[in-house]
Image (tube, rainbow over all chains, first blue to last red):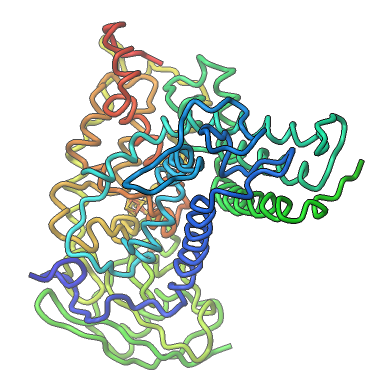
Length: 267
Length: 253
Ligand code: SF4
Ligand code: SF4
Ligand code: FES
Ligand code: FES
């Protein structure tokens, strides 16, 4: 049985869409960037090396929690041993990456991004999707998206840790404070973008004041809500900038670990 | 300055139909609805089109122009390049009646399924007072002109006829959000019914409703996502759920 735009009773038009603009460009770019990120992050997570170049640590590996962590890279100690899954040794990145990954997978903005570009439901507005059935976020596994707030809270812990990492980058490789390098700037920007991403999150907006029915009875929360609301309109931008910068920060740390002189010190 | 326009207009009914080529003159500053009227007056006397205000305020002239859901009275002819053929079809999510006119009664049925605001007991008309900050949030949703372009674009029903029974659509999510955010509304099961009866969970926030809304209502950011978060408070957040059980009452915030 034909469904969707080809359903009985609807205007008989054989095209799936009559749009004449280049509607496929946007999903294609989104797909390209997200896919590249996934490939890069997966490769780096498996690499299990070059993630620490004193005092810089890659955001993919922080906090470093297993006994495999290289000397000095573990801010919170190493409560976990060597991890082996199905006979394969896993790097310390694996036990933590699941959280930022979950945060982004359940993010209201990324949902739009991947539902359009990966799942094509729909690829663009008024372009018929290729699926015969659709239940949206009413069933497992997508129903998990309703738990976005938990990932948001865990994300705040990560933001705090990555901010500490950025401050530790005011040391020199010998461990003395009061120095600053390109790496310091890279990690500071990384923390800033991540805080921007979290602060503009829709769950944050809800928790801060969106839940209220009487703004007038909660003037301080209302004020806070108006600020988060302003940031919230830029959530998409924060999502992209923070994603790309996390990858760049990791790349930078990797390069410094291979070529220590790349990390120029300003003072 | 006049220009000659090439059009393809869909003509037919619920059984059969197709695109017909038309060539027509267009004057400077005209909108697509003007052109349709000229075609009607000069070449296709029985062309069916629904319109009313010609000012983007009645929501009657919704159709699809070059595949994009739009108001014909707000679409400038000049926004299309000189050599472009403009294709005009009826809305593709609803049953067609004739030519450019569709049967949008689905939306009226869904509207009836949402109970109106319930005022606190004993409160008489004229008594309620609302603060400006509380009014503002719902004021945005009140701009809706019921053009149903958002409903037409939403892939949940546009691409899946069978979902129509369990999904009310973005226009009605803003209505539910407006009521759930209303400081005085006493009906407190709106989150539950939003999820269980109106199909809020079907929406995957791909934002096409917001993209096509001629009133620029931020349907997803200001109504659907806040409603999803409110539903999560009640249904998917064990911490909040436990809290509400211990206090044994729904918080009046
Ligand atoms: S955001 Fe949700 S309601 Fe709006 S068009 Fe997309 S699926 Fe439909
Ligand atoms: S919300 Fe916007 S697009 Fe939807 S019916 Fe109202 S005015 Fe039209
Ligand atoms: S992080 Fe994107 S909505 Fe929460
Ligand atoms: S005729 Fe009223 S909105 Fe177009």
